[in-house]
Image (cartoon, rainbow, N blue to C red; front, side):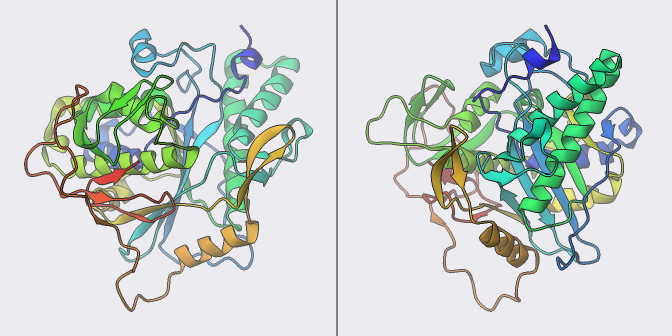
Length: 411
């Protein structure tokens, strides 16, 4: 089967955690002898556009989560991964960046921020792949990969070389498109992960504590959760971050934005888990995380993992807040449903986030504690949260900034 057939785009979503950045950096830094083997891509990273300040010492990382069903060499996953994540096989899926999270780490140890970019935002492409100049932001990677791969193989380039060069071209295009869309922001590094990376990380550190405001079930993702605080395994985690609809409860609706919120919540929950020192002293866990990084993660050539080890530990300790860029309305473009966004508003939001004013008072929209009557003993087979878990914080608005450090309760 050709690469062109394999990359047909499909609306199956991968929930990739930005906290994987912290995991990979911290783990690899601890085991310095294993720095070799992680896939590195030699591409140019975009600097700030004229008029966009970049403060000395800050770091900006783009996390890209692909819906690809193959590893970094284009090889299929082990069958047990396909079975666990309900993802069929390598012949389906594609190379859409269904998760895009821009992580801004300010200089001097300030609060970092992770900004989720809704995958269906309608934007200008930086490179016009296949002659297409506008489209969903998630599709730039796949379109560029397809066009580049076809061009290279038509010239006689061998399959393996064409595949890697096409992946690099796709990364370059997607990163530049994101930078431009966000107002010309700098992107110093990228981390690219796949469905298998998410599953393997969750598998290495399971069980993970999560919290839901409402009982929910979905036949598409396999989700089946009670309300309240509960512990989930790796397969359940996959359903937790993929769910975007409810097929059981008539009074409960979910959207793509709620799924983005779920992904953020899982990142925070994972960070809470990683604060447990045993995570980084368990040899089996460490080995599994390193193997995952080597097989299912790609980073840029200039990413010095060791230099960010202490930052990763700080982020895992709660020094990061997550939020989602706003969508003005939903519309139709080129026969597809898309998110219509205000480019100027997005750029202003990013300027404010990357250069915040000196705070004078506590934010008025800080989340409240979870309701005291939320169930803590789920009836769907999940395990209740262990005693001593951090008090959850409740979020009902997908646009509300999510503060790390405690288990979030979300829809």
